[in-house]
Figure 1 (tube, rainbow, N blue to C red):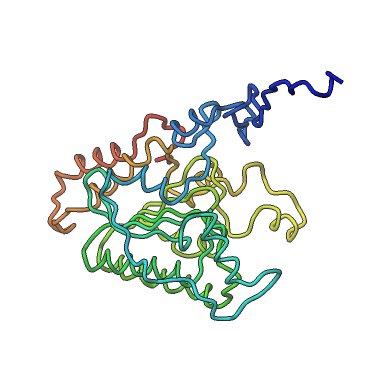
Figure 2: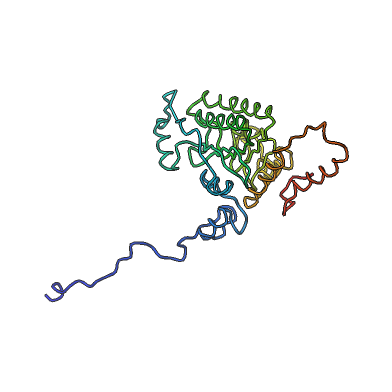
Length: 314
């Protein structure tokens, strides 16, 4: 009976799997293996193919704003359910789940910060919150930050990453297209610059409104920018789209956007535009002809990049 009475051997149970793939991810674009730490240090861009992964609103602020300068505003506007909308799930429940998963109260983060020392009003759409969809709160926060920029005479930067208008709010969501566009018209009348940054993806009512109204429209490489997605368009027109259609490189060629800027250079390029467009006291009539060559050289310097291939053709 000694077989049954002796003490059980102490066997170490391994509860977590240890293998060579721990901490590694496969790039969704080039399928190469990348370590998560390397991806994070590379601003969430693949070091092999330069594929730009999505950033949260907080991460976007960290890459654009000077350290500890961002102040969030207009957080008093909260999501409501004006239509008591329910599809497969109640709208209120969807919002609650989105808040828990994203750590944000809405898809829009707005406020003021400094970008390389330039005081700037900013708005960021967070795709992790219901695909960055534009509901009434998103539209209201963006409108408020635009009006704040006008009152404080600040330039405006909006970073878009969105699936479009939020269907659960129906007409209330669609009204935000007109509201944000009207606010930007007032910003234009106040002669204040607006830089629109389009990231992957930017689509639907966001593309059809404020995202396409920038004085300068910048896109990240290989970003999907469209109103309706390629699959929907192909189903409607019954034919295949050209290769790369609706990507930022295709839209640059067709003139819809002004330039494509790598994420590593985005902050510096935005600040160059901000400094160029702000602080100009003279009117056009006061500029004499002798200053035109100098102005032309300055404009040429403004649009120079280390990688001219991804910049707008002059």
